[in-house]
Structure formats: C-alpha cells, structure tokens
Length: 170
Image (cartoon, one colour):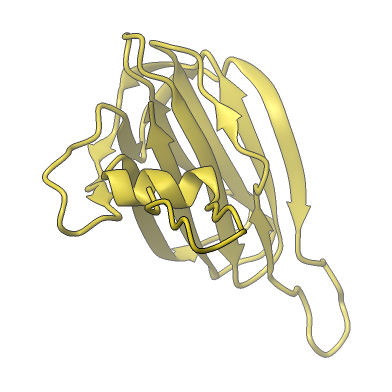
C-alpha cells in the first residue's frame, strides 16, 4: 500500500490487480502451440482450489489465423492434462498459487459454456484467414473447487495459438 502523505491533498490509489501483485498474490501462466490445424481444438484446464480462496481470473488468446474460442464451467476429465508452470508476478515473493492450470486434458464432459468468441476472419482473398485475439478484461471469479476449460478451435491449417492466464487469489 502507498504510505499516507500528510503534505499532499490527494489520495493515491492503485487498481486491485496492481495491489495484489505487490502483495505477492498475483500469478501468470502462458502456453504456446505453433501448429494447430483446421477443425482441431486446443484445450487448457483451469482448476480452482476447493477452499475459501477466491480466484479472480482473466485470460487472453492470440491466434495467427481464425478460430473459435469457448470457455466452459464444471468440466470433467479422464486426465487433467500436463501441468503448466504458474509464476508469481512479484518475483520477490515466495507465495505460491493454489490454482492449477494444465494443457491438453482429456475431457469427458465440457460442462456449461459461459463465454464464446470468434477470433480473426476467414477471408478468402490474398491475405486468406487472418488471426485475432481475445482478451477477457472482465475478470471472472471462479467457483470454488471447480474445473474450467478454455477451448480454441482452429478454423484454418497451421494456426499458431498462444494463451495467457492472469489471476489473483484472495
């Protein structure tokens, strides 16, 4: 927190996310796939802790070509996927996250779709399919003890996809 300055008539404030970075409670996880073909889906599994901790999540997807982005709640899996490394955005903090993020899970049921976006264009001109990005700037507070799926389906061959999950826990 910024210390009080009695000589200043202004109240200094910072956004909550920025505050959580300083407190060591803000995290980031990224992944990249350099070759996803048309009709193939790429999945990430986000698992919130089954505790009183609340996870405030934002995600961002960037594609080199067009795609369909979907976010599901209450998914089930036969395999959670490969664990991804989550970094604390305060590199001086020793705090660790209780939220888990995986890539390439094996899904048995998608759950309820709670977000959907089309990325890029499917133009047939000289440029062909054009990539796009989706940045969820409206955070979503994840339900405790729940699994989520972020799914991107490539609509063109040789699509490069990057994902970024940014969140804080309180």
